[in-house]
Length: 407
Image 1 (cartoon, helix red, strand yellow):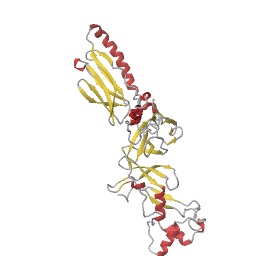
Image 2: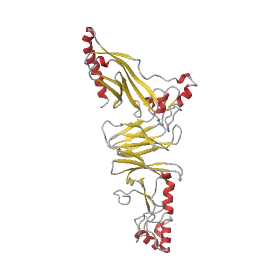
Image 3: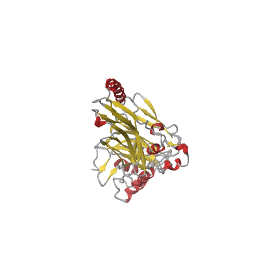
Image 4: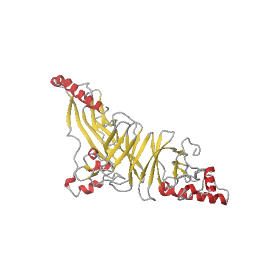
């Protein structure tokens, strides 16, 4: 239930001039401290997050500053709730204390409790007694800003949060969150007004240490991730890996990257972070022949295989938001993702397996052929002699290359 949690998250307010009470009353205690409980969850479904893990502040003026709070619950879920400094101040100014006053005198004392004074040690004894004997918790809870709900992450154990709201490029309002995981990974998450989604995953360390802090240099777009023994610098504007066409660059929705007319670059101006609308590329490509896209795939190639041999076909996984399929003589098969490769196994080469094979990706209506080749069965005696030798070499190279992606 909302009132009986093991973890209870609070935000506190203390006057900067508070030096405690006089020698005989609250000398080493705050006299102005007030506490308000933070709510993160859905009151209708009774789903709430009470373990406060980390916070990040997006600075603005005193009224518009935002607090991004990272929570988790007992169901192996993490959530981020956003609070405004304005709402927090309003709670402390307008809410009654949880131990409500029962008469006018108590109400007057509670009013004075909320006022900051020049010398807290000179507070009236009745006010100090009221502070000492009654709870400093407010009746009202601080709710997420603008009635927003939590940003949910199922089955991710996040440990730290850093927020960049500098709006580097792209249309619409969005912020970028960097969230570290308990196994040493880091997720880059874009939050728009409609939803949030994971843009990238980083593996800054070879092992899986506990990350102690994350911080972004917004000018250089370098993310600094530290463990107890290492500090690693990551380039979050690593735009070249987001494809060689305008459509792929825009579909990535990478806030720190855009299309400059020739490549996906940190200096590119064309991007649509909110929707990933790649059709904006056709508008500028129509105006300039320099913007014609390059084809990623190699020229269609012929591969000769000996009977009953085994062969791995692979094409690169450029986006984990795309769907990948292998088109082959027997039909269409969804791709098996293994790290950054889309694998199709020919386990026993025969005449029925001959023909053209094509790996295709599709994302938000944009389709692209990434690999295309034709497999043929070697039938001559010469090919039969050479086939196994060539196959052993190819197999050894492919397995070595394939396995290297796991280590």
